[in-house]
Length: 74
Image (tube, rainbow, N blue to C red; front, side, top):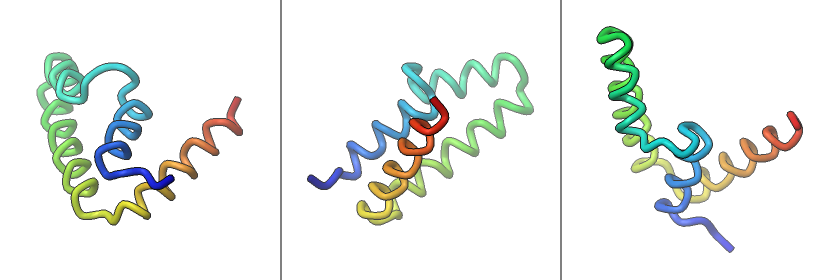
């Protein structure tokens, strides 16, 4: 069964940010260091753009490889 763009985005966010919403993560970084917070915000913007322009098949392949790598690390 293919993974939709929305599902891929949700899975990637869980993988990257655990259970914390990404915007909260950016805000937390910003509160610790405005310079790093600005970088975190740019990173979040680029992440959003990549999710939107990347074909669903490639997102699915990326997820499979990331999850496979995380299983190998166990």
